[in-house]
Length: 227
Image 1 (cartoon, rainbow, N blue to C red):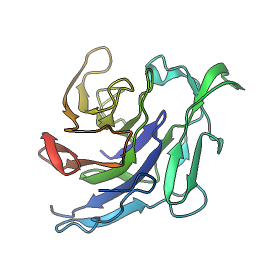
Image 2: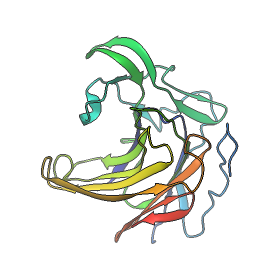
Image 3: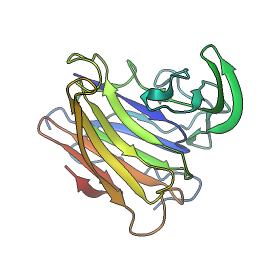
């Protein structure tokens, strides 16, 4: 079963790469894209965001006001004001504004992007270099959902949270695996990583998931914190 990646809410700057294996410090404004040549891994998908617009061959926007299953308050749009590429970074921007779309009116907007049917993988290494927002009520996240849902609805077919941050804890991120039966009979397991100094909003950091046929491994800036 393949999974596709998704980003949501207000992930301010993001660089995503996927490394597949057939067998087996940055500036304040620009992410460091070095170090992507990894022994034992073959690069099969990446986006450096070095163009002038979001690449529609790699990403699609989800446009809705359904709350994401979490009672979220924003309207996800495909407008350039909520997501855009400039100077080698993708910015996803949440705004406090009244916005009306086909599903009603909301007082906030943001963007939610995914690689469904454009980048779907079973096993691999996923590297995302990002600078995260902070503030009460913000919830930036990078996660993977099934492409085909062969074992049933959420979370029977699984969900892999590569990174989640709660806006009032801007020095801590979470890695989580959701599985088991369909909601409400699902379960989850995971852990968190706290920066030794600074915050995730102060600079770019590298978030990594390695997934093979035996286990999942989570890293922050190359430091392993969860299997």
